Image (cartoon, rainbow, N blue to C red; front, side, top):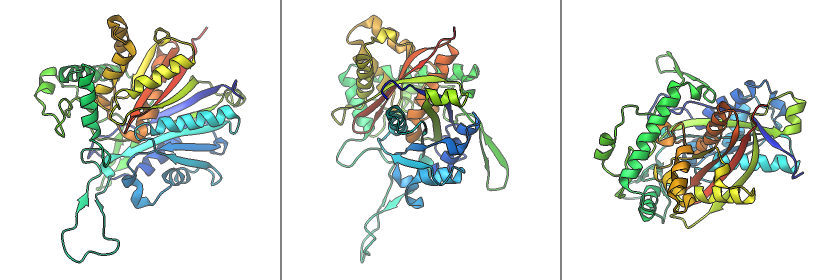
Length: 405
C-alpha cells in the first residue's frame, strides 16, 4: 500500500477573527461544524462517504465546558452519520497538521480511503479557571487562572521568551523580526487585494444580540497601516528581549478543514485532485528551540525524498512569532547568503499569521491550504508547509500540485 497516492480534493477555512471580535462567544465546536459542512458541500461529497475525521485543538480549557470529544460533537451537529469515526488530537500548534498526518497514514495503509483533517480554536472563548474548590475552601482568597496569560507550560518559559532568546542566539534581531512582521502585513494586504484568499475562506454568518445578521467574510486581524516606525515603538511583551504585539500574531479564532482521499477513490468519485500529499514528517527538539523545528521538519522531508531545497517552489512556515520563519530559513541556508535570500523570498509569499492570526488548532491546516492554492495559481509545483508546536515539536507536509500539460 506504500505506493497508494493521497490527494487533497477540498480545503476551506473560516475567516480568522480577532481577539474579542464578533465570534468571541462562539465555541470552536460550532466553528468546526461549519467548516465540516462546507468542505464536503463544496465538492458535493456525501457525508456518509467520509470514513474518519481527525481534528486538532490546543487550549482544552475552551472546550472544557462542553466536556470532551469536541470533534464528535461537531460532526454530529454538522449532520455526519452517527457511524463516522473521529479523533481529537493535541500537538499544540501543530495539531491540525498532525490530523492530516494521521489521515494520510490511514489512507496510505489502506485502512480507509476518505478522511477529513480539521482543527479549530477560539481564544476569545477561553474561560478563567478556578482550581482547588472540589473539596471546599474554609478561608482565604479564590484564585482564578487565565490560560492565555503569557502562553506557556508549567515549569518552562513562556513560548514568547523561548522564541525571542533562541532568535538572538541565531543572530535574528528585534529589527529583523519587525521587518519580517511588516513584510507579512504587506504581503497579506497585496494578496487580499488580488483576491487570493477567496479560494480558502467561506463566510461565517452569525446573529448579534439584537438579531441582526453579521457576515464575517474576511480575516479581522491584519493591520495594513503598519509601518516599521510604529513597530519599533512597541514595547516587548512578558520581559522578552524582542517579541512585541507587532511581530507576533494576535489571539485569534477560526476553523479549517481539508478532505483527503486515495487517488483511486477521487477518480471513482470524479473529483479533481487539488494537490498530491507527497510525504509528512514530524520532529522534536530541546523544549526551548521552537523556532528551529520547522527547519528540522523541512530537512527531514527533503532528505527522505532525495531532494534539495532548490526543488521547492514555495514554503509556508507558520508565524507563531516572526522569529520562526527567520530562524528556520537561516538554519536551512546554513551560512549561504544567496540561499537564504531565495528561501525567504519563497516563504509565506502571501503573508502569514503575524498578519492574519493564529488560532492554534486551525493553523496547521491553514498553511497547507494557503500553500496549495498558491501553487495552483502559479500553474503547479512542489512546496512544504511546516509548523512548530509548544515545547519544540514540529510537523511538515510536502505537497505537489501537478502542472497542466
